[in-house]
Amino acid sequence: MSYVKAEDIDLSIQSEAVILIEENTGKILYEKNSDKKMYPASTTKILTALIALENLDLNQTIKIGNEVYSVPLDASKAGHNPGDEINVKDLLISLLLPSGNDSAFVIASEVAKKVTGNENLNIDEAIAQFAILMNNKAEEIGLTNSHFVNPHGYHDENHYTTAYDLALITKEALKNETFREIVKMSSAQIGDENNPNDRELYFQNRNLLLNPKYSNTYYPYATGVKTGFTDEAGECLVASAQKDGISLIAVLLNSPKDMRWEEAKTLFDYGFDNFEFYQVVEKDEVVGKTYVDKASPKGPDELEVTVEEEFIDLFNKDDISRIESKITWNQEPLIAPITQGDEVGKISFILDGEVLKTIDLKAKYSIEKRTIWDVIFSLKAIPYWIGSILGLCILFTIINIIKKKRRSRGFHLR
Image (cartoon, rainbow, N blue to C red; front, side, top):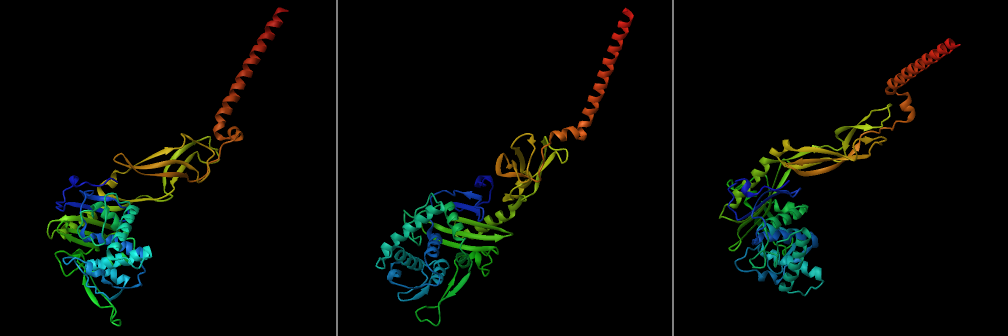
């Protein structure tokens, strides 16, 4: 299914770059400037968290170092101090809920040292190494218009992405259960009261879609994900929501002041109201019947065919009634013998001239080939036998008449 361009429907979205995708299929339901180069601000931390989850043990305890002093004064912080001890899961909560740039530095330092095996990396070297991991992961995911130079999203001309690329990063990150769990929290308390070096900290998630205390911004189906802001990037939001079996990801970059929440809700409502998963065909469902030539009279001469697999997909509700099907046979007509399960053709499902899916067709049952004896003794052969007998009788009658006439003429001549 092709995506719906912004000019095709008016949602009055004012954010500069926007995309709405369905998480499981990756289908684009709405877009506006989705491939435009943009600054991601702290939505960068989605990728940072993903790399941390792939390289660190959640139960691992990390000792905070002087890397936290490298955080710019005007950047958001979780509040880590050198000497603090924190496990990786709590560090990820510190990264994603209050958007801790200090948490991002700690993660970058720990991952880089582990990957390189060099415990003496300074923070600049660690960030450079971590950026390599970020760009490698971006390439692995399939991003084509992104480049990352730091783990936190603090502005840099060479640190950029697109709404579409951010949606792909988020889709990948949401495959991780720990990530899903964290980004859904509206608030969290971390720390161990029994460990003086593991300070207790309380965080409110900056994603106001998740907090029912704020009725103007709360969205009951929201499940995440991450906010971002710098002067250059503007207000940014990567949001997710789930309802009636549909999971949506919305990305809004450079939104007008305080409008990202309402615009995210508009996108989600549009997605949930207009799209649904629809089963076009079930596995082993009979989808057609065709004549089979040279079939034995002992059985049927028509074959029912079934699909080898089911076809379920996400559709605009208005498109479902317009889905068509077309069967292409391996040969026409089919010729016996045919064995149950034989592939005999294909069925294509089509919408507005676009082939959505093609599935192999299998014979529902076997059809034997007729033999010479079947031909001789079949009911269908009776008219031919009758015709042949009548023909022979007529021929014998004519021959006898001719013989009699010849005898008669011969007697007369004598």
